[in-house]
Amino acid sequence: MPSRTSSRPEDPAEAAAPARLGPATIRDRIAAFGMLDGMKDATQAQKSLRLALVGFSNADIAAMLQTTPQVVSQNLYEERRKVAGKKPVRKTRAAPAE
Image 1 (cartoon, rainbow, N blue to C red):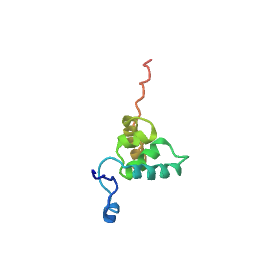
Image 2: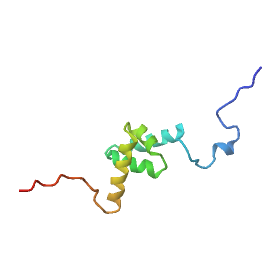
Image 3: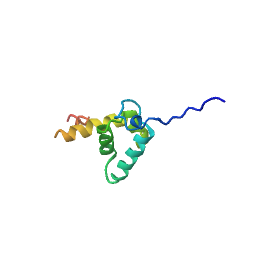
Image 4: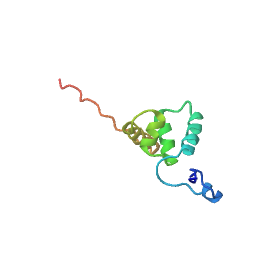
């Protein structure tokens, strides 16, 4: 009879291993959704920044917030500028010459 392999670690020390780098696990995502649930009045940019601060990649954040990694990147840029006390740079049209 072939042996079954389990995705669960058998050693309790492995289960309590320090955070690892790489793609988010299902446990990471569950914890993130719990955190986001408490941020109901926050903007998408604020949520993006919080998730980035705890270590999620732009792709992971985009998947959780149902947007694109490019939008997440722009949100992070603007939020970090706000935190630094600078206004985000906005492209505006030049006023027509008279």
